[in-house]
Length: 338
Image 1 (cartoon, rainbow, N blue to C red):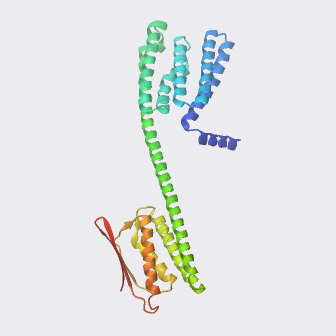
Image 2: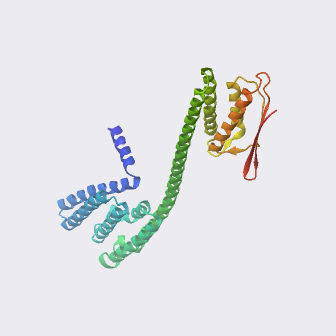
């Protein structure tokens, strides 16, 4: 039973945001509360109170229906707060003074800052204060002269306490606003990165398909014994791209691939593939490049080094020096056989 309830709550959270769930919870609790109050006032022959409670119950049902049809959250909350403000004002001024109505002036302010943006919440708080000043003024001077609930001391305590609630609500608003903004920014960044990754993977797959196509056409023009060399070349080109992604995985940055590490790994792979003992000197001055540029550079190095090995005496392969330097707004790449 508990697991089923947990599953239903999780489904609700996925379907609706926390503000929608809060409004629905308040509406349903309001329906239950005012239904009970209507019955209680009827049983104890408080027919005047019963009429008020029943009208409020109908209004809350109407707000629930309105919200389900339109999904206009703020308007639904505004209608609900107006109904409750008026009902509790009537309840207090008509001698129905008990704990719940006297708590409302405090908790309503938190609701303003929960459901509305800061400017709207401030305006509603000012209107809320003005309304309750009027209610307490009428109670103090007209309907309940001398009643302790409407004494100056009690009224002062109400507004002082509500000020602390206001301070808490404002602090809560800004803390949650910052948190949600940070989460939203992170989600947007992750979505952008994910799209970029999909785009780059698509480009690389197309590139690999083109490499294999060229090798197939090249192999058709040569004897069957050359197929192995063609496939070896294709394998190296594809592994060159895969190695770029391997380095990228370690750096976690699309635009900051460490070239020294990448070139060293690549040249080691090529030498190992051709079982060649070759000395490689690399000078990159700790440069970093983006994924696409690194891929192109890797293909160039692969072609140059493969040719160096193929066209050299296997027992007398020259040493190789690779350098990449940044010169103002451009890069200077050099490859030398020594």
